[in-house]
Amino acid sequence: MSGVVVAPQPAAAEVGGEILRAGGNAFDAGVAAVFMQAAADPFMCGIGGFGIGQVFVAQTGTCQCVEFYGRAGQAAREDMWAGLVRRTAEEKAYVEGWQNEIGYGSMGIPATVAGMMEIHQRWGRMPWAELVRPAERFLRAGYPLYQYIADYFSYPAGPPAKPTQLQRFNASQEMARIWLREDGQFRQAGETVQLTDYADTLSRLADAGGDDFYHGDIATLMVDDWAANGALITREDLASYGVTVAPPLEGKYRDYEVSVPPLPGGGVTLLQMLNILGQFNLASLGHNSPEYLELLIRAMQAASQQRKHLGDPGFIDVSLDELLSPGWAAQMAEAIRSGQPFCGSERPVDSTTTHLTVCDAQGNALAVTHTLGMGSGVITPGLGFQYNNCLGGFDPEPGKPNSLAPGKARISSMSPTILIRDGQPQMVLGSPGSNAIVNAILQTLCNIIDFGMEPLEAVSQARVHCEGGPVSLESRLLRSTANVLATAGHQVQHGAIGYDTLQGRVQLAVAEQLCSDTVVWQGASDPRRDGGIAVYA
Image (cartoon, rainbow, N blue to C red; front, top):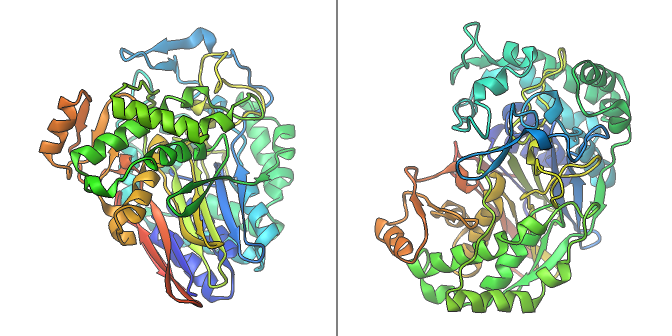
């Protein structure tokens, strides 16, 4: 059995492969690669962020979900933005002044370091410092500002629902100092990035251990800065933060067992879609035919309309038995056959977040999705890394399942996924892409299971995205197909981009059974955005 590391960032996959070749397992390689992602892609993720991982532990033959969500601080209140809620012309709620989107008040508790500590302590075997040092050295040496970083500077989000990117980068003086030119404009692709403060922070993490982030010198620098600038996170919030290790949700699709994260992750929605599609013979429809895409869109709508009822299960009751029951899926399938319309909840799409997939020669597997949200625009002087804007993912209005509350995690689409057959992992995957994550994973799984595609073909195929409002199609899908969908009553947005980063970026590993005792992993990194890489070891 051979190992593989798949990531959107070549530098991260390379480091993960080096750790595997040095004798580390999938969990060591994953931790090292996550820190390198935080260095090489500092707006998609970072040590000021949060996420979720799913592991398959070969020794026990079991999956576990490592939940390191960015939770709201104890100073947060459900109604704190109620008087500032406004609506766009499309009736999307936002907070006037974007207090939940940028600045110190938008931050949730940074959790990525805690998540990596948990994975390392439970299942890793190499010294912690050896896993952090590669990212430190990378930052200290400097690197060219990659095109995918420059692309983030020009994201189209802007008033009224979102701040402009320049407003985000001016949310703190330190953020502007590090990332903007003297004339106040963004740096350009190819310019040298040398983040020595960030490197120094990683050096302290390597020497003192990850616990320094929550109880030591790094913690003191953070909480002093937060207290001076009105953050909703306290020293006690940081010191008491804990990672949750929980069993995954389990379902079936065709002859695979499907293991996904529980709430507040996106696994429920993915299983619902698979349960619906399992009622149909997809292969008979033809891949990306109008009939197939119509069925995909309707399954997406049916599951998405349930998301308004979902939230952190520590704060609200959700009837998962009903939502994941065969009866619910059969009812939705019949509604699709009869042409019943669905009105799903549509949320803004952005392309932040990243993902990493690692499988090793011992049969261990790790899938980690982590993020900064869109980023708070806040950097504590001397530390070099940006904090998340986790609170922007809550419903700004009180009384909703996903409304803000102290200690609460927001609803998320992150869904690192493992498919198992005969007790062994066969597919390990996940994706960045905000609320397009689940739909990207769904289409990749159908491409492989229903249409027999090879891994790279499966992640590269043209995609659709829908949650109940407009249907977004990549430009590679035929205009005639778009016309058929429009005639069927869909509001079709036939995009201008062939490989659209807003359609997710799946990082996939597939086990190829060569004979009874030989398995080789095939890795495939989605070509959307700058493209990634699969590194074998």
